[in-house]
Image (cartoon, rainbow over all chains, first blue to last red; front, side):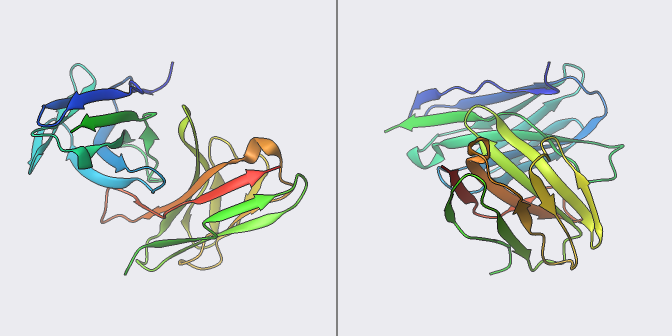
Length: 113
Length: 112
C-alpha cells in the first residue's frame, strides 16, 4: 500500500461547479501538506500549503487537513476551464531533515465550458 | 526571472548512449532533486542533494548518476540509456525557508 493515495481521475465537471480533490495517507508523522497544480507539458507549481490541521483559504481555493482521519482535501469554488490540470498532493514528515516529500499520483481535472 | 532552469527541453537518444541533463537554480536553495514522471506512476525520486558535495539515492536511482559541486548546479547523467528511461524528467529545489519545491519545466527524453 502506498503512503499517499490519490484517485487519478479524470474528474470532469461543468464550469462553475465546486470541485473536491482528496488524498489519504497512512503516516501519522506527516505534518506539512501541499497541493501542486500541473498543466499539460509543464512542471508542477505549488498551489497551497498547510501546516498540521485546519483550513487555509486563498481566493477560490481552500485546503483542508483532517489529521484524525488522515485525509486532506482541496476545494475549488466557481471552477473555470483554466483550472483544468493535474493536481498532486504532497506531504512531509516533521521528522524528516532531508526535505523529502511523499507524493500522490495526481488527479486529472477537466472543467467543461 | 529567478527559478529552476532545465536543459535540454527535448532529447532523443539511442539505446546505449550517454547524456547529461542540466539543472541550475539561482535561488541559493540548498536542496535539489531529480524526479521522473511516467503516466500513472506520479513523480518518482531519482537522486537528491541537501548541499554542495552531498548526494543520495532516491526511489529509482539505477542507471543514473549525479554530482553537486556547486550550490547552483545539479546535473543528472544517464550512463547507458535504455528504453525504460523514456520519461519526463523534472528538477526541483527548496530550502529551509520554504516548504514547497520550485520545479523546472522538464526534459522530455525518448530512448529508441
